[in-house]
Length: 408
Image (cartoon, rainbow, N blue to C red; front, top):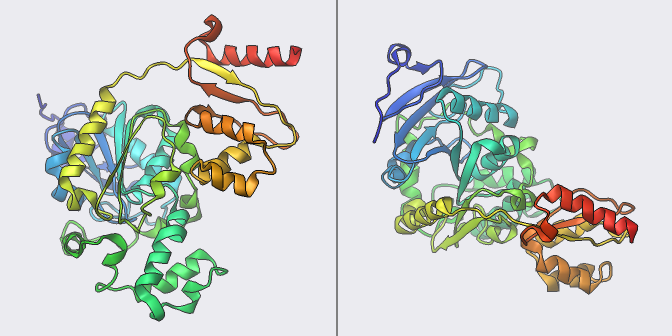
């Protein structure tokens, strides 16, 4: 049953000054610790879910308008306009740092009295979600990646830019084609060459979908302050978050478009979430609009995953000692290649025995690892069986394994 929001201060000022614990259909502004009012709309039924929009700078209004009827039947949505975007204020000091934005979201969570919540992101929102998870994993119960990139530069280099150059053909700037030039420089010369007649082909095969979303640019609730796109080329947003995916244990939905060249149709192959539903749709960058039935079904599968008990893994140790080999490097390289044995062997077969490659391949879904150097012994922990030798504590089992090796 929905609760009615009772908050006198909100009725007077429209700003939430302290935690709130019950909602119906609530529009408010949360004041951040650096005095920026953030627009928030809380609406729906079910688990609390923060929506982190893409762009950067696109705002939350059109997702609510286009897909609210699907989302709000499954989640209590927290639609947020990020700082400098649409109905939220712009910081006078132009503070769009990643750390400050993450602090914004934490302050919204605390202001709304939410202990923990789900995250949903679209496009650029994938980078934002990963940064938030990295800083505050304990407040996140699950993550939904909708047409998301987890590596800005990877998507630009592998998909966005090649697609843009193919669209422009002979008219593309020589600077944009010059792979020796910095990525930002190449991108900046391409942007002006794209227009309403050809830009849509980067995002979708369906021009009507692009036009539908594009029509929201001039809606009164979507007029941005012109600063929301600032993070796009800030260095701190350029982190490649893909290697972190194997460490995320909460339920994950990754929904992608097979013709989404903004992110890359095969970007999903480089991700290794252990507890994930991965679904592809025959569309572009806006699956929620282009394939709403697939979108709804994907959300339902994610909800089922949320309800599935996570068995506590037991621990088995695999100890591979080769001081001359940095196993962490090999693991990252394998991940980058999508765990392709043939590609890996062709490039690095002379540095690592095939038996070791086979071992890494066998346990790739269960590997966790720390840092290693070429002259330091590296221990790979494999989590895949229950209480070996009656020891349920992974740390104790690890210590026992190391001790046994040293006594060998």
